Image (cartoon, rainbow, N blue to C red; front, side, top):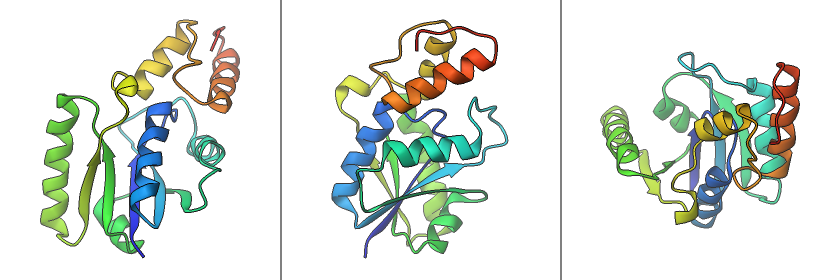
Amino acid sequence: MKIAIYPGTFDPVTNGHLDILDRAVKLFDKVIISVARNSTKNPIFTEDERIALLKAAAKKYKNVRVESFTGLLVEYARSKKATAIVRGLRVISDFEYEFQMALANRRLHEDVETVFLMPNEKYTYLSSSIVREVARLNGNVRDFVPPIVRRALKKKLRAGGSSTNA
């Protein structure tokens, strides 16, 4: 069985993330979406909320599981018997960072490959950071995220004192 890890912060999950997932499930028998506990970021959604949103957004896939992880990604991948780490590449700046990470991971464990997937060109500009900023500034994120995420953003930002047309 070919297992892949699709890691990220997913704060929030975007249509670009789901496009990469759609490509990955065609290549692997099982894809584990792994929500990173990243201490350097200050997410808008809690880890549990991100996991719930991902599960809802990926429910159509029978070969996808969602969970969280901490520590070295390549160690986590090995613990799940994964043969690959899936990473999305939108622009050249993504490649530079991801290339360094892939080489470091290969140095740590050469049996785990990094597979780079490009999203549909209509998502090349899209990032979670852009979605959060547009939503905070009362912009419409309808084309950027699944409906469940749009509703969660609206609720989250309303609770935080902001109004939004998310």
